[in-house]
Length: 506
Ligand code: F6P
Image 1 (cartoon, rainbow, N blue to C red):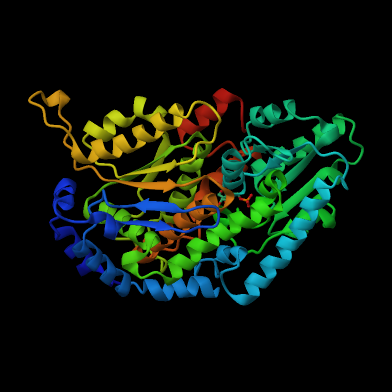
Image 2 (cartoon, rainbow, N blue to C red; image 1 turned 30 degrees about the vertical axis):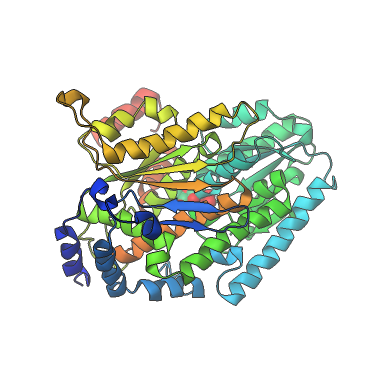
């Protein structure tokens, strides 16, 4: 089937946009492209004024949204329709935050009540003394908990959380060295409860508990999964299995029982605020008209750069040490969701799909990769994320320098600097967006993540792809399993030689 928006994409490509500096001349760009949203936990400012968005660009993208039925797809998402068509499922992560089909919301509330009960029982000491939790999971079952714990539980965790994902034993060993088996619980987080890395690490954690003198190691395990039967079969007591719905995708699952370590570290009230912050973005995404909708605006800018300007990457820099893991989290969210080569109907995609998402932490990244952002030949749209209230008690000068550097980079990218010496000239006209939270709280973190989920969704809908499957991860897993089962032959000569050199396979 031909792309219903093909002519409109061509129209977008042919639009001439003035330079960023020219766009600011005589126009109040902040009034149109900078919005502050009230979020439980504090306001967040979304400043997209230093991008090439104009009413003309938005008009074409708005018509593409119409042609691709963005409103209908958004309504279908929140109504719990099977929007993940290739797997025949709904995508009901927003129901975990209380926004969605009533049956899914009621089910999520019941499962949260069960999770709250277990969290509070542990806090009250009903399961013995628990000082640490080793959280074992990978991908969507690990990146979210790791981000939220690192962002919010640096100082005052009720239970110390160690997130372990890699199959490399160095990762689990490092966590074990910091824990005492007598006071440690293990969370096995896996939607499918079959993932090789997670199950191998979980078995090694059981051995460690056993060797540490724990007579009933399964008694120390909590399972976070959409496959509760498999968890029980593996040995977890049914009372410590915290299920979540099959319709919650792995990279969208932090709101479900996958968020158990977050609630355990911070307490239930904080976890509830985290959900409320995300729900505020759900409501904004549903209700705000396109020209005042921060989610749609961000996705429109993303699409303008990838589709009309051929930009292949998007960089995210967190100017806050507590958000250091956000670029990694967004990499999975955006690249696993929208890194597709066919439409939802299986037709070849005739346009670029997701840009490559990458990034780092400011100011560190300034001294490493910003040279290319300012003077390289690639044009890379940048997102800056910063927080007004510092996360430390040191001299306020630290935070002032951090924020002034953040804002200076956006200004420099846009303005550039002329010089007769080519090596010292900055072309400028390079776009950036800035998200500034008043404070980093459970609510604002929840909102930041939900904002990116829906931003990814909008891009997918305008491109006509399904953001909720990930078949591209399967082939490599299947080959690794074949090798582990002793089938190290029949590959290309390079792979066979590598296997032989490492002493693996046949
Ligand atoms: O291999 C990719 C993937 O399926 C991700 O989508 C998922 O988040 C991760 O693996 C872990 O899967 P599970 O939660 O089932 O262990």
